[in-house]
Length: 228
Image (cartoon, rainbow, N blue to C red; front, top):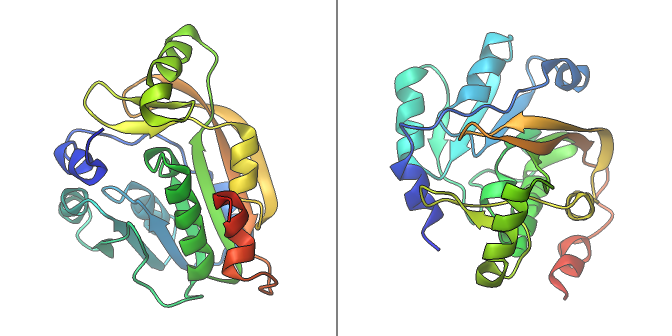
Protein backbone atom coordinates (compact mmCIF):
# COMPACT_ATOMS: atom_id res chain seq x y z
CA UNK A 1 0.00 0.00 0.00
CA UNK A 2 2.98 2.24 0.45
CA UNK A 3 3.92 5.21 2.59
CA UNK A 4 2.15 8.34 1.37
CA UNK A 5 4.81 10.65 2.80
CA UNK A 6 7.47 8.63 0.99
CA UNK A 7 5.44 8.76 -2.22
CA UNK A 8 5.13 12.54 -2.16
CA UNK A 9 8.81 12.96 -1.35
CA UNK A 10 9.62 10.71 -4.31
CA UNK A 11 7.51 12.67 -6.81
CA UNK A 12 8.06 16.13 -5.30
CA UNK A 13 10.05 17.46 -8.25
CA UNK A 14 7.96 15.72 -10.94
CA UNK A 15 4.34 16.65 -10.29
CA UNK A 16 2.56 19.84 -11.32
CA UNK A 17 -0.69 20.56 -9.52
CA UNK A 18 -3.58 21.67 -11.68
CA UNK A 19 -6.74 22.31 -9.66
CA UNK A 20 -7.74 25.95 -10.27
CA UNK A 21 -8.29 28.40 -7.43
CA UNK A 22 -11.54 30.40 -7.55
CA UNK A 23 -10.22 33.78 -6.41
CA UNK A 24 -13.49 35.60 -7.08
CA UNK A 25 -15.57 33.49 -4.69
CA UNK A 26 -12.83 33.32 -2.07
CA UNK A 27 -12.26 37.08 -2.07
CA UNK A 28 -15.94 37.67 -1.32
CA UNK A 29 -15.34 36.44 2.22
CA UNK A 30 -11.73 37.44 2.85
CA UNK A 31 -9.69 40.55 3.57
CA UNK A 32 -6.18 40.89 2.22
CA UNK A 33 -4.69 40.87 5.73
CA UNK A 34 -6.56 37.79 6.95
CA UNK A 35 -4.48 34.85 8.18
CA UNK A 36 -4.74 32.10 5.56
CA UNK A 37 -3.39 28.54 5.87
CA UNK A 38 -2.89 26.25 2.87
CA UNK A 39 -2.83 22.67 4.21
CA UNK A 40 -1.06 20.17 1.99
CA UNK A 41 0.35 23.10 0.05
CA UNK A 42 2.82 20.98 -1.94
CA UNK A 43 5.35 23.32 -3.50
CA UNK A 44 3.31 26.42 -2.65
CA UNK A 45 1.44 27.04 -5.88
CA UNK A 46 -1.76 28.37 -4.28
CA UNK A 47 0.15 30.34 -1.65
CA UNK A 48 2.07 31.99 -4.47
CA UNK A 49 -1.17 32.82 -6.31
CA UNK A 50 -2.62 34.40 -3.19
CA UNK A 51 0.56 36.39 -2.64
CA UNK A 52 0.35 37.64 -6.21
CA UNK A 53 -3.26 38.67 -5.55
CA UNK A 54 -2.26 40.88 -2.64
CA UNK A 55 -2.84 38.67 0.41
CA UNK A 56 -0.25 39.42 3.06
CA UNK A 57 -0.63 36.86 5.88
CA UNK A 58 -0.04 33.48 4.27
CA UNK A 59 1.24 30.14 5.54
CA UNK A 60 1.65 26.89 3.65
CA UNK A 61 2.28 23.53 5.29
CA UNK A 62 2.97 20.10 3.83
CA UNK A 63 4.20 16.86 5.36
CA UNK A 64 6.55 16.25 2.42
CA UNK A 65 9.90 17.82 3.20
CA UNK A 66 10.95 17.64 -0.45
CA UNK A 67 7.79 19.41 -1.60
CA UNK A 68 8.57 22.24 0.80
CA UNK A 69 12.19 22.32 -0.37
CA UNK A 70 10.96 22.70 -3.94
CA UNK A 71 8.59 25.46 -2.86
CA UNK A 72 11.34 27.38 -1.09
CA UNK A 73 13.45 27.20 -4.21
CA UNK A 74 10.60 28.47 -6.38
CA UNK A 75 9.21 31.04 -3.94
CA UNK A 76 11.88 31.92 -1.37
CA UNK A 77 9.85 34.75 0.14
CA UNK A 78 6.85 32.61 1.08
CA UNK A 79 6.22 31.11 4.52
CA UNK A 80 6.25 27.39 3.71
CA UNK A 81 6.59 24.88 6.53
CA UNK A 82 7.13 21.14 6.83
CA UNK A 83 4.59 19.54 9.13
CA UNK A 84 1.06 18.33 9.53
CA UNK A 85 -0.06 14.75 9.29
CA UNK A 86 -1.62 13.78 12.59
CA UNK A 87 -1.93 17.35 13.89
CA UNK A 88 -1.43 20.93 12.77
CA UNK A 89 1.29 22.71 14.78
CA UNK A 90 -0.65 25.92 15.36
CA UNK A 91 -2.61 27.38 18.29
CA UNK A 92 -6.33 26.89 18.21
CA UNK A 93 -8.48 29.47 16.46
CA UNK A 94 -5.48 31.12 14.80
CA UNK A 95 -6.49 31.31 11.10
CA UNK A 96 -9.24 33.13 9.24
CA UNK A 97 -9.23 30.63 6.38
CA UNK A 98 -7.96 27.15 5.54
CA UNK A 99 -7.41 25.87 2.00
CA UNK A 100 -7.54 22.15 1.17
CA UNK A 101 -6.89 21.39 -2.48
CA UNK A 102 -6.66 17.73 -3.56
CA UNK A 103 -5.64 16.79 -0.02
CA UNK A 104 -8.62 14.76 1.11
CA UNK A 105 -8.09 12.47 -1.87
CA UNK A 106 -4.60 11.54 -0.65
CA UNK A 107 -5.82 10.86 2.90
CA UNK A 108 -7.92 7.97 1.67
CA UNK A 109 -8.90 6.40 5.02
CA UNK A 110 -12.16 7.79 6.37
CA UNK A 111 -10.76 8.16 9.88
CA UNK A 112 -7.80 10.18 8.56
CA UNK A 113 -10.14 12.47 6.64
CA UNK A 114 -12.27 13.02 9.73
CA UNK A 115 -9.18 13.81 11.80
CA UNK A 116 -7.94 16.25 9.18
CA UNK A 117 -11.23 18.15 9.10
CA UNK A 118 -11.35 18.16 12.89
CA UNK A 119 -7.84 19.65 13.03
CA UNK A 120 -8.87 22.33 10.54
CA UNK A 121 -11.98 23.10 12.59
CA UNK A 122 -9.84 23.60 15.69
CA UNK A 123 -7.31 25.77 13.84
CA UNK A 124 -9.94 28.10 12.34
CA UNK A 125 -11.24 31.13 14.20
CA UNK A 126 -15.00 31.27 14.82
CA UNK A 127 -16.48 32.44 11.54
CA UNK A 128 -13.42 31.19 9.63
CA UNK A 129 -13.63 29.96 6.04
CA UNK A 130 -12.70 26.55 4.63
CA UNK A 131 -12.08 26.18 0.88
CA UNK A 132 -12.01 22.63 -0.50
CA UNK A 133 -11.43 21.36 -4.03
CA UNK A 134 -11.38 17.60 -4.45
CA UNK A 135 -12.51 14.61 -6.49
CA UNK A 136 -15.82 12.80 -6.84
CA UNK A 137 -16.54 9.30 -8.11
CA UNK A 138 -16.44 8.94 -11.87
CA UNK A 139 -18.61 6.67 -14.01
CA UNK A 140 -16.31 5.96 -16.97
CA UNK A 141 -15.16 2.38 -17.47
CA UNK A 142 -11.50 3.08 -16.65
CA UNK A 143 -12.38 4.38 -13.20
CA UNK A 144 -15.10 1.81 -12.56
CA UNK A 145 -12.59 -0.97 -13.23
CA UNK A 146 -9.99 0.35 -10.82
CA UNK A 147 -12.55 1.14 -8.10
CA UNK A 148 -13.70 -2.47 -8.27
CA UNK A 149 -10.19 -3.91 -8.50
CA UNK A 150 -8.89 -2.16 -5.36
CA UNK A 151 -12.04 -2.32 -3.25
CA UNK A 152 -11.07 -5.58 -1.58
CA UNK A 153 -7.52 -4.37 -0.89
CA UNK A 154 -8.54 -1.11 0.79
CA UNK A 155 -12.06 -1.90 1.97
CA UNK A 156 -13.48 1.23 0.36
CA UNK A 157 -15.07 1.77 -3.01
CA UNK A 158 -13.34 4.63 -4.83
CA UNK A 159 -9.82 4.02 -3.52
CA UNK A 160 -7.17 3.01 -6.04
CA UNK A 161 -3.44 3.00 -6.67
CA UNK A 162 -1.74 5.25 -9.19
CA UNK A 163 0.80 3.69 -11.59
CA UNK A 164 3.66 5.43 -9.76
CA UNK A 165 2.64 4.16 -6.32
CA UNK A 166 0.32 6.77 -4.83
CA UNK A 167 -2.98 5.79 -3.22
CA UNK A 168 -5.93 8.13 -3.71
CA UNK A 169 -9.69 8.18 -3.25
CA UNK A 170 -12.64 9.51 -5.22
CA UNK A 171 -15.68 10.30 -3.08
CA UNK A 172 -19.45 10.13 -3.07
CA UNK A 173 -21.33 13.40 -2.73
CA UNK A 174 -22.95 12.01 0.40
CA UNK A 175 -19.61 11.40 2.10
CA UNK A 176 -18.32 14.90 1.33
CA UNK A 177 -21.53 16.39 2.69
CA UNK A 178 -21.17 14.34 5.86
CA UNK A 179 -17.49 15.15 6.25
CA UNK A 180 -18.14 18.90 6.07
CA UNK A 181 -21.51 18.88 7.81
CA UNK A 182 -20.49 21.12 10.72
CA UNK A 183 -19.56 23.99 8.44
CA UNK A 184 -22.18 26.32 7.02
CA UNK A 185 -22.08 25.87 3.26
CA UNK A 186 -21.47 29.10 1.35
CA UNK A 187 -20.80 27.68 -2.10
CA UNK A 188 -20.81 24.26 -3.75
CA UNK A 189 -20.37 23.46 -7.43
CA UNK A 190 -19.53 20.30 -9.31
CA UNK A 191 -17.07 20.50 -12.16
CA UNK A 192 -14.32 18.57 -13.92
CA UNK A 193 -10.64 18.85 -13.10
CA UNK A 194 -7.50 17.81 -14.91
CA UNK A 195 -5.54 15.63 -12.48
CA UNK A 196 -1.81 15.89 -11.84
CA UNK A 197 -1.39 12.91 -14.19
CA UNK A 198 -3.27 14.62 -16.99
CA UNK A 199 -6.59 12.77 -16.74
CA UNK A 200 -10.07 14.29 -16.45
CA UNK A 201 -12.02 13.64 -13.26
CA UNK A 202 -15.26 14.78 -11.73
CA UNK A 203 -14.76 17.08 -8.78
CA UNK A 204 -16.26 19.77 -6.61
CA UNK A 205 -15.53 23.27 -5.33
CA UNK A 206 -16.70 24.07 -1.80
CA UNK A 207 -16.63 27.06 0.51
CA UNK A 208 -17.88 26.80 4.07
CA UNK A 209 -17.87 28.83 7.26
CA UNK A 210 -17.19 27.65 10.78
CA UNK A 211 -20.07 28.79 12.99
CA UNK A 212 -19.31 31.67 15.28
CA UNK A 213 -20.02 29.62 18.40
CA UNK A 214 -18.80 26.12 19.17
CA UNK A 215 -22.01 24.38 20.02
CA UNK A 216 -20.71 20.81 19.88
CA UNK A 217 -17.75 19.22 21.55
CA UNK A 218 -15.20 17.16 19.66
CA UNK A 219 -16.83 13.79 20.20
CA UNK A 220 -20.31 14.99 19.22
CA UNK A 221 -19.05 16.72 16.08
CA UNK A 222 -16.92 13.91 14.72
CA UNK A 223 -17.45 10.78 16.79
CA UNK A 224 -20.60 9.77 14.91
CA UNK A 225 -18.54 9.39 11.74
CA UNK A 226 -16.23 6.95 13.48
CA UNK A 227 -19.15 4.99 14.87
CA UNK A 228 -18.45 5.96 18.48
